[in-house]
Length: 426
Image 1 (cartoon, rainbow, N blue to C red):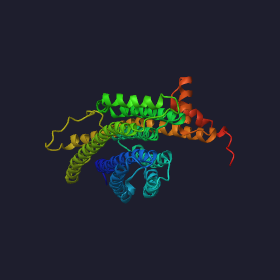
Image 2: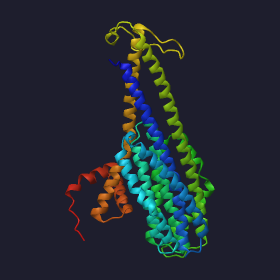
Image 3: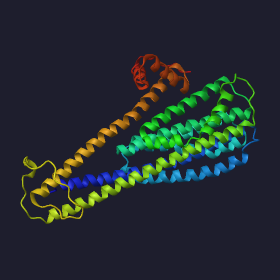
Image 4: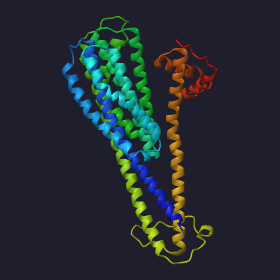
């Protein structure tokens, strides 16, 4: 008959399996981050290339395409490894659905690049195509964060997702500004889009600092050069504060692109540090769990050899609630002390898992809030015929005017969904 210790060992093995899976998931997130970074740069170069009529960044764009192909191969290899071990993934259905959606986009990249090279697309159309693919890749990261079962790892994954999302808005701003300067003109719609991208970046970075912790937040702020930020803000004012239709200097397109690229490259350094922290935490937690498993297995082997009669330590209220800690390398306890030690280990494991569950619920609340806001935006876009930017602004204005949190307004919008009239089919 199996003992309580046997099932405690089984629980540890499950925990190790989950940590191994989290390590693979974290590696996938880091690899996707590198591909997204490469695609973001290709998008910016493509915008300047198209807006300048093919006169600028042709060679750089070809070089970047090669870098993207290498990063794409690494992501596909990670996808293949996940698929080979699909049974061990808790939210595998959602995660693999996101991957299934992304793969056709990766397969369509050569055609997109060919059309850009042939000048068949506008800068706005090229940007929209890259944004769609990058959004799909970030959705994979979101599901990875949502499926994490360890709260400390989950917090870092949530921080990393929000940082990557903020970096994507920064990349879109680079592409938007590059097209404006290279074409020598700006308009009211693009100015509004530009301001929305700036605001969206700040929102994402605030969530990142909240979940990443003080040290990583300080690293992020330290990585931002005051001179570079001042230069970028100066160029933002040139393009966004000027009246619509004012001629912009096309020579500033390269200056803008390089200025934004330095900031985005600094973001990538922070992202790589987040990935390294994730890898280290996974390794440390796995090592601790394996050491604990080895100790428990040795204790179980001793129990199997022990022919002593069972006792009622479980019901022994006079025994201390916790046994004194055992010195590493010392002989295992015997008799009633041994039984009490095993019960303490089971109780400690139970309390630890309970605490982890409560912390994990707190972390996932942030992800659930994001889901609610996205659903509310989608509903407003469908029934009010708004853009994503307009829907988000409507939610924020309502939250500010009513003194409520954004997620509370989103919940109210979703609660009214059944009362909204269906849209006529066109």
